[in-house]
Image (cartoon, rainbow, N blue to C red; front, side, top):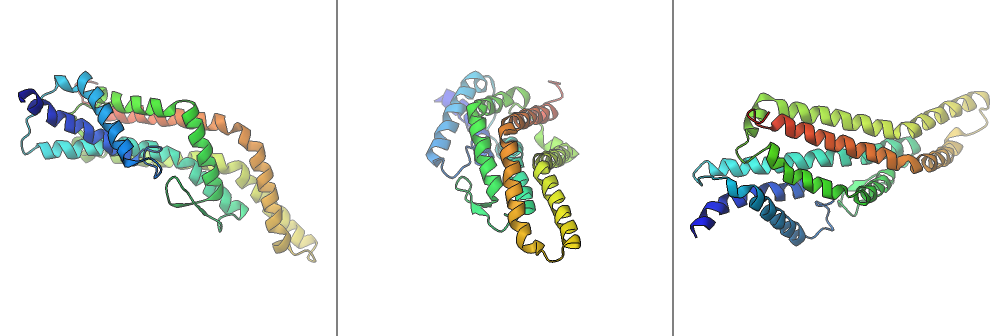
Length: 263
């Protein structure tokens, strides 16, 4: 009983980080994933981390223990949010494509998140999930979560990093980079639609008898679908680059938040 009383507070802290990560992280936070599965997976991962790392730690469950719990929850949410931020790149790119092609009025309900999402964004998101699972990205994501204790132990100084502004600066830079990646993914169709609008503008000036509003929308849809067919085969390489950038940012985040003694 004494060993259980000493190990349970540490086990609970590790469990808080794991479950907080599953609340935000893609794939695990989908509506189709049962809550019991998330809790069970978090429990077994917590048990593995506790047996390899937590048995060496010792924490006194006093009044500051609540701060430890809040800090571990924030760490899990922060790691999951960084992963989620890079998964939303394809939905942002799809939204930009839909606005250019005229599909913005026909948003669909994403069954994985339950929110309204653009058509092309939903298509690319499903392809992204399939590519991520095919390359065992979920295994790497769980490994990064479990290895986070090498960089950010239970006695980390997350509150000091938040107070210094490093965390907010990192989130802003990551957000700007994800938006730039989304714009780069959508740039072929955006440029094609812009050139189509320019051509329709010249047509309206040279041949006013043609109603560009009638022929413009079907023409943009046809050109957009044709461009989408051309760029879809290269999406796997784009997604691999996206995943490598995501894991690089996770490493940068853990390096930034590690203790000064370990740096």
